[in-house]
Length: 333
Ligand code: ACO
Image (cartoon, rainbow, N blue to C red; front, side, top):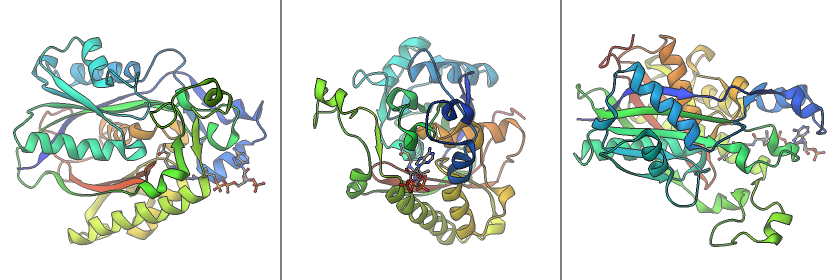
């Protein structure tokens, strides 16, 4: 029996930063940002850490679905902006939410973090190790952004998506298939150079701005277009699905051009593609669960819908997951 998402929620900070914010002090323009990325606005968390994005999303989840947090036995946090290198953010979230009966850990896979963590959470449930997993994809990207670097400052935002993973009540619904990859050769194109054991923090690393996101955008772009489209088509084909069978593609929201290339290769019409990059930018591990939460809360996802989640990020990490949606188990809509 597969595991499945049985509840979903998200949180975005209230501070909206539109492209005119950057036009005031960077050599950039609203036109360039929209044409090259599709982004119009993003949200910045002024105070607090990644756990402060997760906690309100989790509290909303518990309230909306009448979940008793004491029944949750596992917390997984996908993030590249943990509150600390250690302790893990899962422990910080546990403490802030006052949850008593849990263990948990963080997963680092950048923009593929939610996909990797979803597969892991479902495996824990399917093996009987866990019954109820609080799965969180969250990043405070502003904590590692150089706001003076026009090549990266305009791309990212802060946000969190959380969901509950439990055993499905139907053998044909839930997480049906996955294709996940890593290739460390891509590490040179997208990384946080310093702050780990490779290059611990020093005056030099701070002076050289090596704690900020480093990205060779063009090389990442080329790899992302191919990587996301390849796995999305592969997961369709090996499950004998045509574009007509797919209700939605939920792509990682890094660049509208990457999303469009993936949707085109899959033969999907625009209305079958979840896109909110224009409002929130790239929130890294949070983009996919935020999309799912938004669309589900608007009543746009039905039980039985085939949904392909697809992402690409630093590592390189990339992959696709086929979900057959099984909510109504909790009857939100
Ligand atoms: N405003 C104006 N000009 C800019 C800006 C800006 N904000 N940023 C860069 N430029 C300039 C460059 O300096 C360059 O100028 P030049 O031709 O004089 O040298 C020109 O625009 C073109 O730059 P490119 O980097 O080639 O622009 P590109 O079209 O590739 O777009 C972008 C850049 C948006 C970053 C794109 O490469 C991209 O989306 N890459 C992939 C991002 C991604 O998927 N990342 C993975 C997930 S993130 C994660 O895992 C944490």
